[in-house]
Length: 115
Length: 112
Image 1 (cartoon, rainbow over the protein chains, first blue to last red):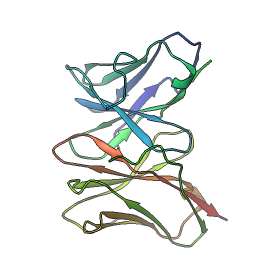
Image 2: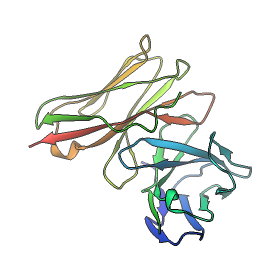
Image 3: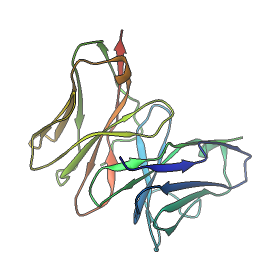
């Protein structure tokens, strides 16, 4: 299947700093990528839809100034958690479909811990 | 609506038995459904999908059943193995939108 690579897999940062997470489609071009957040023992919550060449679409309740998304190329989307706080600690996962309305392939996830 | 923020139910199955994982989806307009498997600390992996013009689809050891009347989806795993232990999520999609919404998830524990 298609490969989506996410980096880093784990990151620990201090409160108040910003953290950037990268999501790459390695063997296909992705005009759309998705960013999810997952708390322990819970489901994936869609945060935003990343659109290549245009602004991301954020889900209700997700602060766009807090979670900056950039999709500058057809193979890379980045999520920057700005001014991170301990409550931002979570598992962040990206995904990308190879074609619209087909199964999406997921990155390995990034475990963010804010101390 | 979205089924988020709830703790995962658990299904315990003896190795070799068949497993049935159920999912109720919320949007009657959804026309594409996917099952994902998520192992601890990893991203979800695609298992099988089904479109709304079908009510059953089979893969290797897995079968997905779709009942649109009651908005219910199930995943059947034949001859469950220890490697099947994971959290299983159903996801729904409407073809006019790229967005995929995940269900609550079920933790499958296989007892050796």
